[in-house]
Amino acid sequence: MTAPADLAPLLSDEPALLDWLATMRRDHPVWRDRWGIWHVFGHADVQTVLRDTTTYSSELNRAYDGAPPARGMITHIDPPEHRMLRLVVSAAFTPRTVAELEPRIRVLVRDLLDRAGQRFDLVDALAYPLPVTVIADLLGLPAGDHPRFRAWAEMLFSLSIDDPTDPAVATKMAEVVQPMTDYLDQRVRERRAEPREDLISALVTASVDGRALDDEEATNFSLALLLAGHITTTVLLGNIVRTLDEHPHHWAAMTRDPGLVPAVVEEVLRYRPPFTQLQRITTTPVELGGVTIPAGAMVACWLVSANRDPRAHTEPDVFDPGRGVRGAAQLSFGHGIHFCLGAPLARLEARVTLEEILARGQRMEVEYDETAADGGLLPFEQIVLGTRRLPVRVVPMGI
Picture 1 (tube, rainbow, N blue to C red):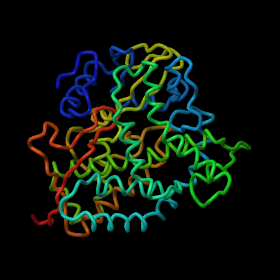
Picture 2: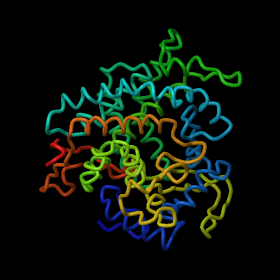
Picture 3: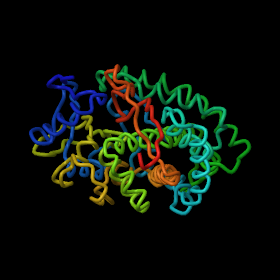
Picture 4: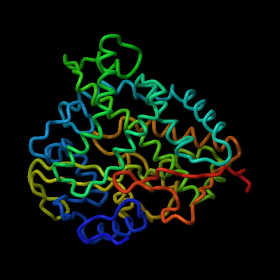
């Protein structure tokens, strides 16, 4: 598919997307599309935008006249409110707390692999149920509700958005999110009446700097944790298996040295980040990449492009776990104060999954449907770089 000259290609056409991003990095590192959105493609420029919370606001509702602030939605809040919200939940995602989840995650992975058999859809059998079980347990949500979480997430991330600046977009998204909000609002009210040992109870009972969260803030915060807590890992696990299918010798390398697993996970994050963009709104006119961006403009930071920037990574289109991406060079979980709280958990879930597959002396091969244009994988078109389906077969490592 050829993209219009003034719009980005759809994410479902990954080769066309990567070609377009390479051209934009070289020729138009800061670029305005037909809707007036400014796109940023280079690694250094993306870091600049994500680090500067004063000039580039995360309160995306600023883009829509009359839209209320997203109270409690940690990803869409600026300092100083952001600090308070982050402190409320950060205790649940300390390295020690996440590490203590490993035995539970390992048992879940083993059980899911046992039930899956030799041929299955990775998303249905493993990549979705694993992270949603973990984050739902942390929040205190019942296992019986997992199917509705998936249906809600599918609706949200499958939204077709033509003009992101159209106020109707906010209305459409609000309609999709409303069932999730209603569900979590009820859970918040229940925990406020009878707190338990779970994250939602922690949100409704916490107080930072003398201020507690109200029901709306706790509900929106729970929504952000539920969505981010499973969709990122679901897509990441699929991307890991797809990428290893394209570079199968890494299965054998990890078998010989399981210590390579974290580096493989990290390189997949760089090579195929689950989320391709992060958006910000300018609070004042600013010069970036030799271009002046006006105040009140939406800025789209292309993580997948920054990750392929040759000024940041040598031979960036080569999948090389040995390159040692770490720290601020790894942008796939964000950068600055909004760096993903759940990054350690997503990394843990991915590492344990690979370790458990390898421990069985197995690897996975993707079974493409040659009669389908997309190989039968049903890739997302916007927002997420990944697939809704991933048929695989399990084979012994020696084959």
